[in-house]
Image (cartoon, rainbow over all chains, first blue to last red; front, side, top):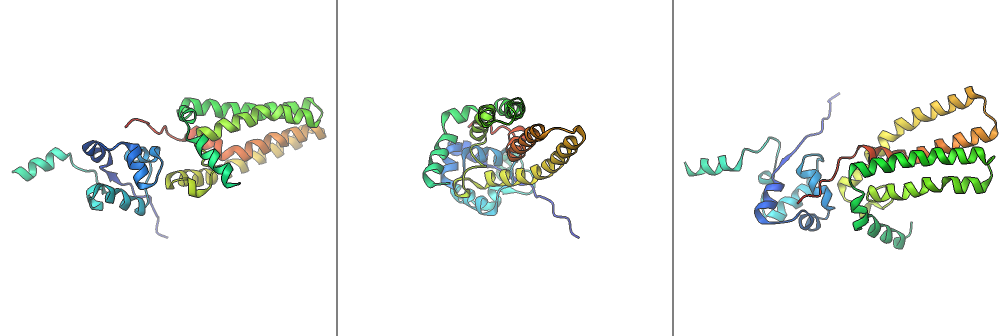
Length: 85
Length: 154
């Protein structure tokens, strides 16, 4: 029988919130969850549903893969510098 | 549970006072108080010879702890699904699943101990009361003890 293992998502929520000056409470209210749950998602202590992932990405006006990833995100400065070179 | 009661509880579990109970040290203190409360209730039943007044007064500390436990868990075991988010529902369901196993083992120990100790009717009743109170609270106790702090920082 195939073993089902919980997949862990990496995310850029904290970075996006900081960049756009959105508080945890504001984001939670916008996507319909309790503020502590945003903290659990940011710290990867809870694997959110696809529906919530889409709502979060839509809130920031980004695609899903810009906010969530199966692999750790590279530092943003690396990507900025890569674009400049 | 009525909608009015649910509304009132929702406000209570999201109040500033409930916020202060969200830290692990507070939650663990409440868990210990609940277990102590259940022991106290069992002792009161035993020493009161099973009289109803002793049962009620002896279990008051337990129910008081249960109230604070509910606040510290933001009411995830009492509120309806519509008032909880998906993370809270996941935590609650996981707790029921975990507590089921522990409760089963705990009840087997209690039943074995009761039969070995050869207790009288009141003794069996007080131990049963302790087992009952801790069993119904097991998911809440496990969650309050194990859940990570929500980290209120922005």
